[in-house]
Length: 211
Image (tube, rainbow, N blue to C red; front, side, top):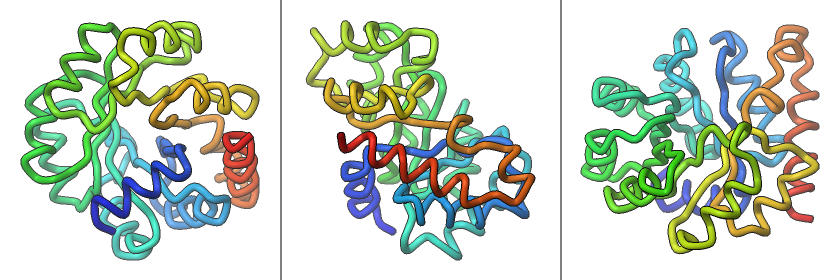
């Protein structure tokens, strides 16, 4: 899937699934469950064991239907490894202009993490596709709303603390999208083989985001 197609998917659904701690033997099943639930955008975090080989495998099997990226990209070394594994986009928890430059030069969408207004502006000026406001679970909707006041021209994603009961609020606020991890990628359900639970949660989030 090329960059334009992937960004169109994200623009349409506005939800990025954050896959962390999933065993490699389950990864294709989890991706398929997300896809069946209506979420075709997912990142595999690099602090997940086997993340790089998972990204390669997902691209081979589902890359035509899903936008698959690498998350928890901390530095330039991580960025290079993710790119070599075939990640279609990069997501970071921190602001590292070298990583943003690397992504931009290779035509990869990049979603760097930022917290303060200064970091948000720096990330955007450096070339961020959208800026990931993190940790939103601690900062909350009110903080995002305040940021959007003077910085509404900068595309921002809320990552952390987004649930079925508030996802629509973030979308209506004007967020570029949201990132959802543990509440969607339930490791116990996956270990129990209940991938339909992942599918159903994805479908509810999609429905709630649409109002």
